[in-house]
Image 1 (tube, rainbow, N blue to C red):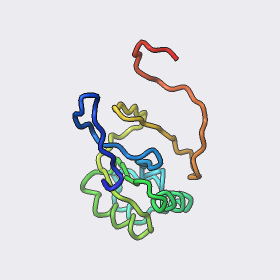
Image 2: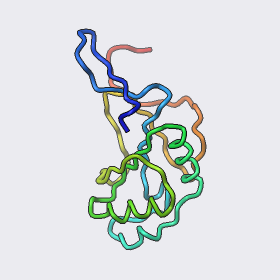
Image 3: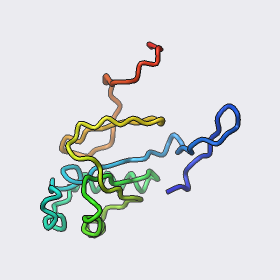
Image 4: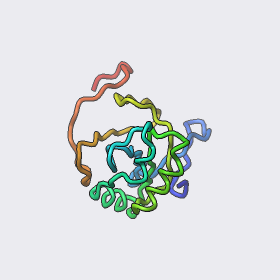
Length: 144
């Protein structure tokens, strides 16, 4: 996953966290209700038989093949990792990493020192389009 990372420095030449080139995206993708049937953690026996969404499989594998980073970020817990990895493999999903333990409940607000873009899944995976929207930002005194 780190083969694309570019080293960067601050104005004094001190190393900063590396970044990806502009043409490579880090996709963090939910699993339940986003790439397959929505299965709650309380019913892990259903995780192995969840129906994959074909448009998600095609789109994510295309992004992977284009060189983008695919990371599944799920509210499933570590005890569900083996089931989850098996299901992803059996259903043909290509990915680089799998992060377990995302907070449950939605209404996410991600704060980071790197650019973060969010796309709400509404039932179909397609290529992404650009759209102007209103977002919340920190008041840094600059009003553009």
